[in-house]
Length: 98
Image 1 (cartoon, one colour):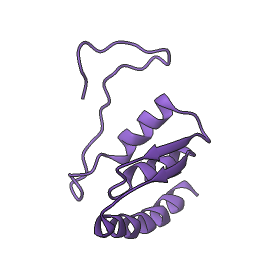
Image 2 (image 1 turned 90 degrees about the vertical axis):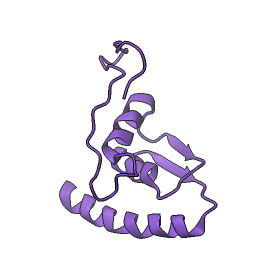
Image 3 (image 1 turned 120 degrees about the horizontal axis):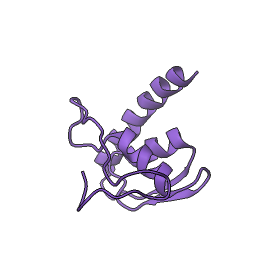
């Protein structure tokens, strides 16, 4: 997605981010997009605050890009689903990184 004419940033990036949407979880922003945004706008070790954590996609992107994470979610059911999914995601992620 982009707004206006794509322009170059200091890191030779445009404001266009191309990432496929998951067929299994189309309602979620792709972790790859979130990771790219985190890499563009924060540094490793930074703390990222997610005030609407939902199913924790930003937490997973923080894990993948070595950022620290703090999140809030009022819906316990959504948060439980996010925790369960994230536990499986971390297993797969660590297997693929190793």
